[in-house]
Amino acid sequence: MGGQSSHLPLKINMSGVIPPIFASSIMMFPSTIAAFVDVPWVPGVCFDDDAGPLALQSIFFVAFIIFFCYFYYGCDFQSGRCGRERQKSTAAISRCTSRQANCEYLDTVLGRLTFAGAIYIAAICVLRQC
Image (tube, rainbow, N blue to C red; front, side, top):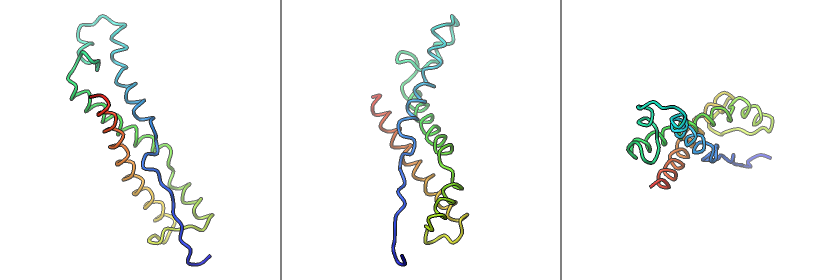
């Protein structure tokens, strides 16, 4: 149909709640190991509620959440596959002429959306800790 426009639904947060779960698991790993060993310096590097400043714990938690958001995005989204699927359905982005340009444009847009989603998830999780 000529002249018909459509939209491509993109998620702001492709990964869901997986990044906070992985981040909290990584943060709790040193304290789990510290429970089994009797080394005096090990509790100092743990992120328990009793040990370490809350600001440092929050910075690491936010960094892990952002990392896992991008990690999940990198594993889940394959721009080549998306380009082939859109080419089969004869869909195209109006500014992009080739399939490669479409894929690069989608990758750029989804990278920006992933950053916004990662910051949103991190803010919710850090506010939940306070």
